[in-house]
Image 1 (tube, one colour):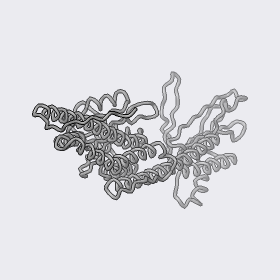
Image 2 (cartoon, one colour):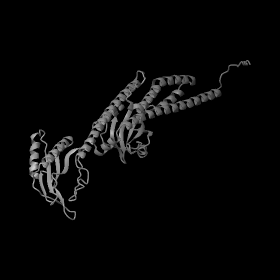
Image 3 (cartoon, one colour):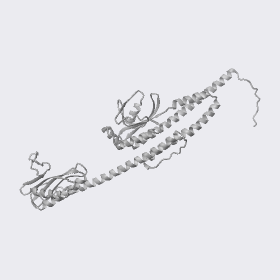
Amino acid sequence: MERQKYNVRKRRLTVKTAIQMAGVFLVTMIIISITVGIIVQREVLNIYRDSSFSYTKTIAKNVDPDKVKQYLSTGKTDAEYDGMFRVMNAMVSMGSLRYFYVFVPEKEGIRYVWDAQADDDSRPLLDIWYYDGNYPEAEAFEAYRTGKEQFTTYSYGELDMAAAITPVINDKGEIVALVEADILMPYIRSGAFNILIALLASLFFIMVFVMFQFYVYVRGKIITPLLKLNLAAAHMVENIDSGENMYIDINTGDEIEMVARSFEEMNRSLINYIEENSRINEEKQRVSTELDLATKLQADMLPNIFPAFPDRKEFSIYADMKPAKEVGGDFYDFFFTDHDHLAMVMADVSGKGIPAAMFMMMAKSMIQSRAAAGGTPGEILRDVNNMICRNNRERMFITIWLGILDVRTGDLTAANAGHEKPAIRRPGGKFELIDDTHG
């Protein structure tokens, strides 16, 4: 059906109509300005939120909770502490973070473990910063109590801040510390206000066009790159253990591209740190396994099956030893030199660890071999001493107590070569040291 045409006579707007149209136009611009301002503020705040948590989650995932407890209890740093401090400073140097720190909330303030700041005014380990009226201590204590991440905004002086808080949790589920990243938000409130003023200062249709062009520009130059950075940060957190180098497709030619390159460098630094830390842990595990094996081998060399002489009714004997380290030079021994004489040895090699254990095995063999040939304890120790001194370039020494028990009579003949005094248990359970002569 053909549309009907109407010829409308042109006429001037009355003052009342002009006022009404101006009012509608003004109300429309105000609504659009407020709506756009809210949307922009919300989206920018979400970007800041995700970006903040990408920093805190990265540190919370890679920091060693047991090391954190150690630093808090001892107040001493080490190479691993310094390495994490460098990583945090690298993250701060990208330009987005204002404050970045690992801490424990206390009643009066927060106690620092690591503190990285953009102005290089970092606080040392165990330093405390006392709360002021604006710091979100309620969110900090909530995260420390429940283990749930917290995000809030607050003002610190003239600065608007977005704070993301992530707990550091050990394998036992204990919350040992918190990681907080504070990012400046200079354009959230002021940006929305400026958009509103700009919209009210221009005609409606021109403003729509300008806002569309501005949105396209901001999306292409800021929002899209920031979203790419946000996705890259999430990808880095999820795949940091894979060792995959990250490349972010951002070529804006401005500070955002510099941030992207800094993200890539930070990813490489974290990968190198994790690889080095893994290598150190593997080496520690290898050494620990070898030491465990050496401990078992050393324990198997000593008499450890009791009763040791089940067919002998004249006496009973039991012995035990707990070395100061996994392996060491302390040892005991007992054996028959003939049918009626039981030799008993207590000894301690100078030093600890594997060298002392090897020297112990040599000395134990010498004592057994020499005792089998007969003689008094003094004669046996003298000959063993001469054998040890012949090839002892490291000048290691050993203290020995050697006793030979005549199981028929109960008489004990002993010699002490610098060892601790033996103790005898008297009837009634009382122990008494025997003040024998050394030499």
